[in-house]
Length: 250
Image 1 (cartoon, rainbow, N blue to C red):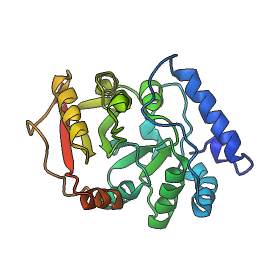
Image 2 (tube, one colour):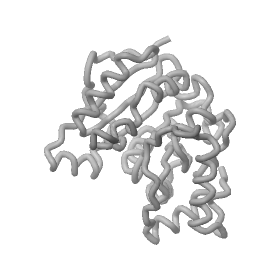
Image 3 (cartoon, rainbow, N blue to C red):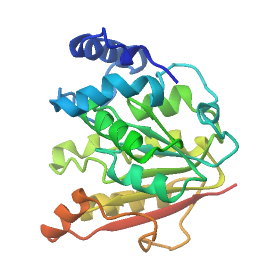
Image 4 (tube, rainbow, N blue to C red):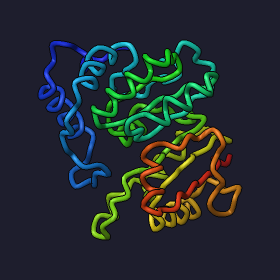
């Protein structure tokens, strides 16, 4: 599992230019981004782990449909994609407690990628792989239809200002893109601590074809989903955590 971005001889600036060029190649003119283009500073440990471990656990983005299951030592196991894993805290904990499932984390920000790579090594996780790229492109160009058993979208950017709501990830177009990628009977698990975004998620999936909500509303927290430091920060601010669980219908 290697990627050119993992080369120790490639500078951070060169990696940034390469990523930006790739993004321009697949995004139509005028398409709205769901993430902000910013160069977050990597800590020395994150940079070291990014350069040292991406070749072992990273997967290069390719604008062609790929056998994502073949990226793992045990490809016959269920495959779950996590979109926007942040610092990878929940990713690593879930993967450690559910070793019979493979997890593919997709994240655009390198500090989080570096952090999760360090967690993978520390916990000796063989069931996690990472794509350092925009999830919309990974879904649209790299993921085969019915290729995913589940999708996790935990605490996506809420874009709280009303004028920025169009940048939120969970929109009808995104759900239409996501639907064929999840196998019938597979699930999408979403979590947010922003009430109006939670309601938007509920409305979008309620209106979407191909998904059912077994709870007819928000879902109870899954016992295997850990409470992360990010979530605790939201709770300290008296934010209510909203879980949404939908199932891909036939």
